[in-house]
Length: 217
Ligand code: GTB
Image (tube, rainbow, N blue to C red):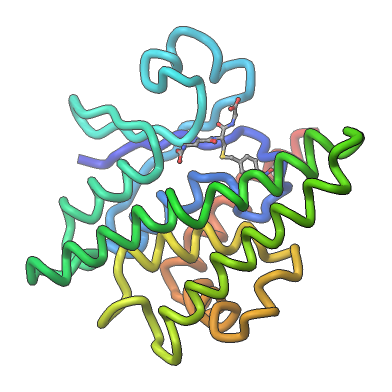
């Protein structure tokens, strides 16, 4: 059964592939699973039909027969469990790959989101200039720790896994921040992820949505 995911009809990132459908597309491309995409506008996301799929009125969602999922982490975990290619078969290696998925979402992504909030929503707030360096230092601390963990390895564990997909998906939100280049092995790790053919196919697909939306305007 071909799953259907949802994505922004008009992504505010103008095709930079920063919305979270990008990670789901990437996972589907890695395992070779074709998928369909239903595009939704911001107002459609808050209507009952979409809220029935996603209680918080967001993208991405994932529908596969009777199964409806939201939360990119849960969706990617499901894809990785259902198809070969993103999680090792060996129990302990599999557990460690899953651990990195959680680490990406719960240890690395939160300060990155705080930074985006400070830049986008609190830019004219009086506390912005004091808060931003604190957040960026928190991010640096996490990147330094991750850099030590990765060392000179290609991926976080033995081979590329859903843990790397999630980690690269999260880290690339910093692509334009200048922070990644302070940690050359992390910058190279993100570039390795983005160089994967499956990533490129997913990126091209979401960019196509943006390009088409420009043609409609
Ligand atoms: N924890 C959820 C998950 O991982 O799936 C978070 C889902 C989420 O934040 N979805 C966002 C959304 O639907 C889109 S990805 N927002 C609409 C709303 O809440 O009303 C977040 C996002 C949006 C835009 C950019 N950008 O423009 O760069 C980047 C990331």
